[in-house]
Image (tube, rainbow, N blue to C red):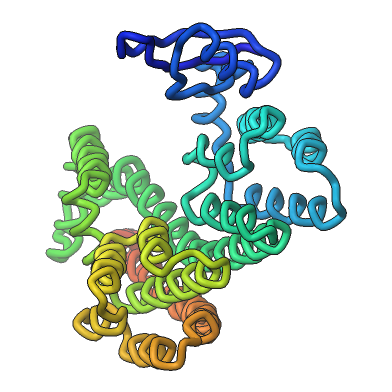
Length: 403
């Protein structure tokens, strides 16, 4: 096997290079025999770097695939199957080429004596800090199977809840986008043909019909300019919310949106309580648990609050103290956390909070779907009505006068 190393020579200079050995330990020994002090020794991936990066861009690992991976790994570990064999079995049945490459590299690291958690940590785009910490906790405590089971259940819950929320928002987004595209085509191509009939008759039409006719004429001539403006505006908006300042501002905006804001708040509270409870149950120190949870919240508002709570705990304070000063945290969560701190049963309390907000998110999702459908129907009906009264009605009047 080929290993990439970074080491110090007798003069203190840093040297980098490659070394062939049957294992990582052998590579370290070989470097030491040559008078080098190893600083970093990693097995060289058998996959070309460019090819791996291309696979990562085209076949990112989905939460569903991660959930299945954890479930299968937990089952194999419980059955006393060795790690290398377990990872090999999972790799063989994966369809995602990039995920297969990642598992193959982790399997190679485990073969070389590296802990599973360290192998996972080398792939932060696939395994987040929570997963790495839970596995490392299981390795230290000797309850790795239990930790992986916790991780599988947690990932499945997060995936299920997030999928429900996304599903509720996909439907109206698709309908609105389709309506806008059809409306753009109708105003640009169909409307001018209808208005030409009215213009040829040279009759007096209501003011609203004149407005629609002018709109059709404008769109027929400058549709490309309108399209450029719309695409540019959307592109600029997407670019802005991907910047650090834009993301912070957008995270504040979405929480203030009617209905959607309440849904996202329930999702974030469920995510916080569920993941924090899992880490606490896994024996991860509270400050580190809060830091890890802050990274997976998905909203800069709550990330900032959780990080402040970590600093407060580090200084000898309580989480509830920070939550009490934060308007984004519901009072019931603050009270429940305070009870957990006073009774020493934080993980049990957090599990109840997670269950409550999980159910709250499901109820809000169902209500959102029920609320959006009539709103979309009314909006589309108004659009059809404007076209009918503004264009079709005058045409019918003209036809009646001709008869």
